[in-house]
Amino acid sequence: MKSSVTYLLFMFTFLAGNVSAQEIYELTYQFKEDSTRTIYRGLLFSNSDSTGFLRLTAINKKTKKRVLYDFTVSLKSNEVSEKKKSFLLADSLSGTYLFASSDEFTIKEGKQIANIDQLQLWFKQDSLKRRVEPSLQTPYRTEYALLQQKNDLQLTRLLSEPDSAGTAKLLYEKTGITSVKRLRLSSFSKSYLSQYFTNSELYYEGQYSKKQVLAVRNNTKPVLYLISVVNTGDDDIKSTCIADGKNVTHFFSRVASKLGLPYVEKVIQENNFNAVNVRTAIKNIYPGKDDIVIFHYSGHGFSYKDDDQNLFPEMALYYGTPPNWVTLKKASINIEEVFNTIKAKGARLNLVLSDCCNTFIKKRRDEIIDTVDRDRGDKEINVRVAMSLFMKAKASMLISGAMKGQKARGSVSYNGFFTTSFLESLGLGLMSMDVDLQWKNIIEETEGATMKLATEYKTTQNIIYRVCDTKNNVPCVQNIQYKAAK
Image 1 (cartoon, rainbow, N blue to C red):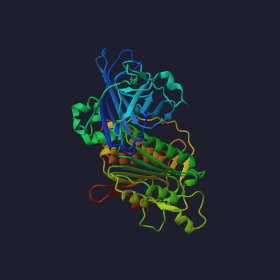
Image 2: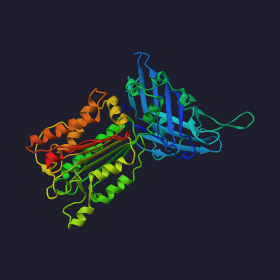
Image 3: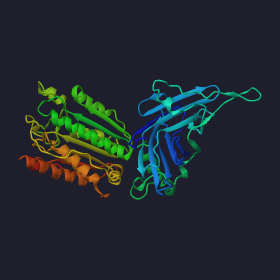
């Protein structure tokens, strides 16, 4: 089995209406093809929303160090793919079973004790048919060769044998699960959880609380929502806007994955790029009080010259030039409207970003042709810093790439100057060891980086921002630099 990140997918689709909110099991497991016959201790979580995870841990007898495997778990019957397979099997004699397998995993700590060919898990419906539970035995044969038959959704049923009285006797074989015990939340303590989590995972302003472990590691919440709006139709800017959009979605999907958060992404571009779809996308998200909402716009923008009330830019949500003033007004949304709408939904952390011009209506965003050689590689993410920024912060932030009267620049090498500066400042912050890093530090770094990049291209560009506390009724902090721009 390859030691690379994956998800063992098998969801409670056939019992979803009856399972309780969360089932937790402690188990022991032995891989059938493991010549060392190592017994692994396991902690299995499964949720009514079809998510969960399995941790397997054991001590290497030679090195005396532990190895810790992580499988993200869900249940879906009769699924066949290259990396995973699952089958729902039922008959009147043996009852209902679910078989699930996967040949990928993540090693969270240590080195493999032996090469593992495949994880195989069996579940059986309980007597009241309310849930499925891990099963120590199965009446179905699970020889590995059978599992290569991708189009065959039936495993071989073990033949029954009559006893001395002529009564049919069911035959069973071991599943690999050697013991199982259902747990309650009260079973958890810091010392217990340390058996199944690394030290870095068990820190969040000190040690994790039980609630925090369950919320983050079970992928139930918080949820990270991302709405990305990208101008892909105007030839003068579309190449840098498309790159901005891809970089933003890639970056935040990595953050969500690193933190184990559910990730919901909505991209508005091409023929869907218009004001109606932007408002609909925002309307259709329902964040909880601990969730995260990120909105990013990359495209043309403008400002009305005599409008002293709106210091943040209008997003030009159309391609080409509108035929008249009425169409222009209907096809544009001020980014501050987006900010206020998202903020009112009550999520813990809101981040609204616009990389567009804030110039008076006739000027448009530039795209500079250059050939700068720069590193675009992904940066490592320090989980403790990411937890501080994304799991602890309680703020609503509106940041735009140019103050009123200014153009937002982009180049072939750097894409949008503001978007690139923001992602690189945030990326470098997440690489650091500074667990006290704050969003204000990221904003300050972005401000400096945007100005520096613009200067290198002999132009001027200053970001503007507003930062509000989502939990306390205190004045927002902002820097709109309007007088300097006017």
